Image 1 (tube, helix red, strand yellow):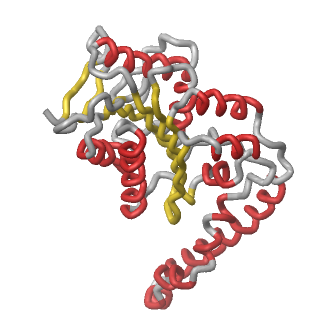
Image 2: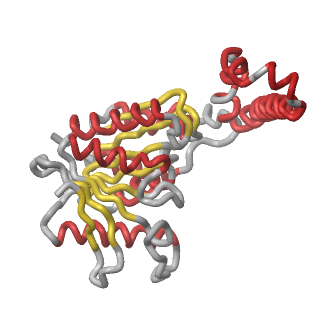
Image 3: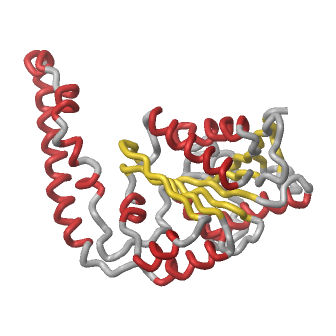
Length: 293
């Protein structure tokens, strides 16, 4: 059976989809996908579905489900805070598979808020052997961080003549006055983003270094031997975190064999382009194969 619907609560109302490889790797962890923001278990641009299939081909089982209030999962409001009922829902999933004797170790994988949840949950769960954080923000920035994404990411497109030539159509400029106005609006908007981004970038450099929580959490996670893979795209604010980490954390991660990272350039926050999706998926599969064989 390649894919199967799994009900993970006694009431039989909460479920997800597990993808089985034809030949499972012995004692390989189960990859559990965590929602990116309010996007359902397919993931932004269907990335989770595509990734689960490639993981399946590589011999790794994976489970996609929805957290409370997202997709098909009804929020039953049993807990006082969103953070708490998200964590309890994930605990229900992990407890189900452990009780069934199917898996006793797990890899948590998430994009954006899902990445942060993977990091936070792994701190207190020994069954989590690895986390894959895609565009998360749990890597604290150092004193030189805080560069504006509008300056860093969009400046090269604003000054790339080839891209503007693709956008501009002189036939339309002559025939459609509205198109001419649109071009002016876009150019003006990009210029304003660039100028205002520079100002904000300068101000951000004066901000203090990372808060004490992240600096304390990273040694806990890495010293316990949890495999960590951070993937960031150039078009995400998380790039600033990984490009300018607090020195204490930077010194820590380079000294540990269980930390890996990958930067994907020319990719936005949700990996819209097919090329960036391919790079993301291939990188994650390679990491799983190299660290969990």
